[in-house]
Amino acid sequence: MGRAEEDLHDELLGRVARSYFVHGMLQNEIAATEHLSRPSVSRLLAEARARGVVQFRIGPPVDRVRELETELRRRTGLRRCVVATNKPRALYGTSSRLGYVAARYLESQLAATRLFGVASSRSLSSVVDSLAAAHRPGLTVVDLLGCPAGSTPGGTGKAGECGRFLDGSGPNTAQLISIRLGAAFRALPAPFVYRSGRALDAALDSELVRGSLELGQRCEVALVGIGSMQRFDGTGVYSPIPAQELARLELQGAVGHLCGHFLRTDGSRVEAGVAPFVLGIGADDLQHIPQRIAVAAGPHKVVPIAAAISGGMISELVTDHTTAAALLSLLRADRTSGHREPQ
Image 1 (cartoon, rainbow, N blue to C red):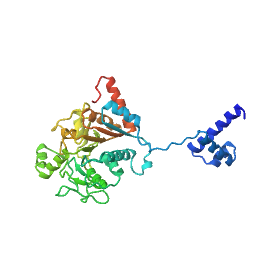
Image 2 (cartoon, rainbow, N blue to C red):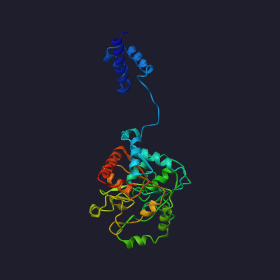
Image 3 (cartoon, helix red, strand yellow):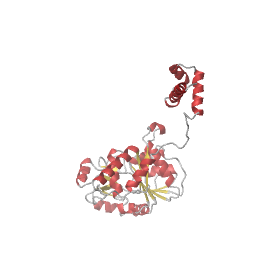
Image 4 (cartoon, rainbow, N blue to C red):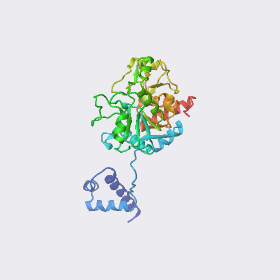
């Protein structure tokens, strides 16, 4: 076989291998397309494997974008950044890729944890859905935000089989996580949002409420969401703060919220009294928890995430590919305009 014939053969080898391994064509379909017999196609595929035209690599699923994780960690100064790929959700049934990756990362961080605080919100529902069932009797999941649904006088709660509370109200993320992990649960049995400081003080008169808040301050790991100014869901199934109130907070410079604390772009907080009165872990107390994992993604979350990082509210971030890329673009733009990157 001369050089020209060898080149033509190698081109055919590449086409046949690509048709079979990349495009998923059947061998008889390739044979018809290339005017070959089916045994000839089989021999060409065997040759492609033997000569290294086709190479197989077996490894863990490619769920994360490691390059973006490294760059985001360098830009933000966060302890860890986890970036989920934007692969189709169908790979994990009803769970989102972000929820799957976040759940796996969270499970890896709880091995030696005894007190795990959760700021209940709907934004963390995909994490709950993706958690593997476990038996962790030595772990206590602590509600970091007021949420009376499903609580009992002893400070613990129990959800029904369908994931809703026995009183028919909406989901409490912290309680559902405790059930998935087979862990104990400590409720914060009081409403989250109050109309006045006096009403909030009255709720704080409860010894049970104060005890739960104090336990939350001792948590080793916290899981939180980050909200935009589009809505404020609190810990229930409805938005307790109307759009007009959110618009007023935007005029005060708020760009997002975390655990009920409204943040400006530089990470500073809108003062209580201007912001709603909420019952939950204080911003300073949250910052004293060693590991503060935020799960947040979406175009409206980019600026709030940057604000949470600037304010030192989180130590770790789990997000998706698109959000991570947009966050990096924002940080680069801030640097170009002379703003300091988060430390």
